[in-house]
Image 1 (cartoon, rainbow, N blue to C red):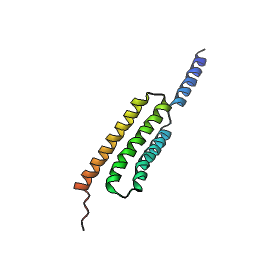
Image 2: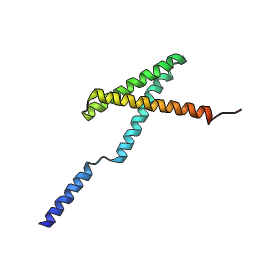
Image 3: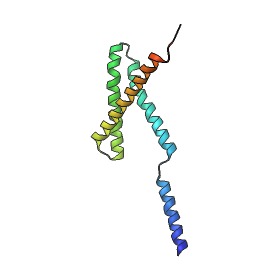
Image 4: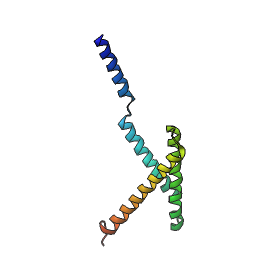
Amino acid sequence: MKREMTDRNDEEKLMEKMKLPNPYQAAFASALSFSIGALIPLLSAAFITDYKIRLMVIPIVATLALTTFGLVGAVLGKSPILRSCLRIVCGGFVAMGVTFGLTKLLSSCGLQHYE
C-alpha cells in the first residue's frame, strides 16, 4: 500500500516537472524576439536618407512593432489585449530611453576618439 502511494507520488512529481518551462527554450525565444524587434525599426530607417524624417519614422515604427508584439502575446496568452499592449509599449519605451541615455553618457565622457 505504501509502495503504491510512493509510486503515485513519483509519477505526479515527474508530471509536474515535465510541465515546467524549459529555460533554454525561453532564452532562445527571448533572444529571437529581441533580434526581430530590433531589426524592424532599423530596417525601416535603413532606406531613408533624410535625417529628420528618419528620426520621426523610427519611433513610429518601433511603437507599431511593440503594439503588434503586445497584441500577439495577449492573444497567445489569452490575456487582456489593452493591458498587454500598454505594458509592452511602456517597457519598450523605458528600454529605449535607458539605452539612449547610456549611449549619450558613454559617448560624452568615456569613449572619446582622439586624432
